Length: 223
Length: 80
Image 1: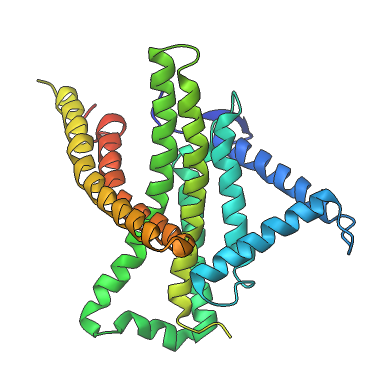
Image 2: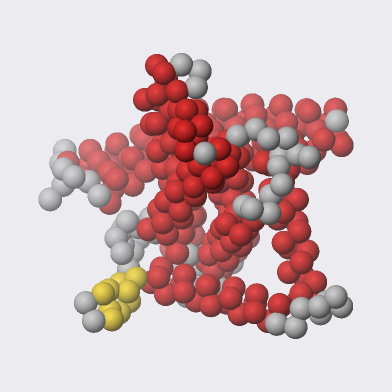
């Protein structure tokens, strides 16, 4: 076992600011995603090239999934939820590239994403209902439940963070232990399992964010 | 017995016993979902989506135990 999964993994520092390995990986993933999006939409038109067609399939699949989960028109929420999902898929699967470690395996990246979800839940809720009606749902069935309602706001975001971190990090540790015990070929099925875990955790994170936002926005039927 | 040994034993107990409850719960959830899909294969999409979210919720308990174990092993406030 190398080092603590809670300790930062400093690569280099720019002036007084230390740069973590997770930060470098995150920026690399962001560059790759931005490049793919730019290439795909550079000459977008009615006759799509293969990349634009693939991106359109991806976006429309995301939209239909989110619409099924939230039961409302989903295009308002797709920029946030779709970006979360695509980024998390890339971040979790970066573990499969030799020499790279997933940024979600350290606590900082899931924490940052969970904070984004926390604030966007309130943002979308206030925007859809108005401030007064949104705050009233904390005293909904009875004002006695106010502390529990407020507490659940924090615990569910905390568990969102810890779920992603715990799954990815524990899978990293499992791979390390298996490599330590038995050399060459035995880790391969575990790494295949890692692909499954990475995609499922990205899916769960995005779906739970959609459920939280949907609950905050309130029940409006589709059409 | 030093504090380190107690921490390692505590981490092992936290993960092993903390995994029992969520494992049983997830088993029941998956069994019920399988039965429902076998009865109504056309609703498999909705069922599996709900199942994944539910499993994530159940799994949270096991992950809390994992966090406790990690705190004991790597960020123990009583050591050093």
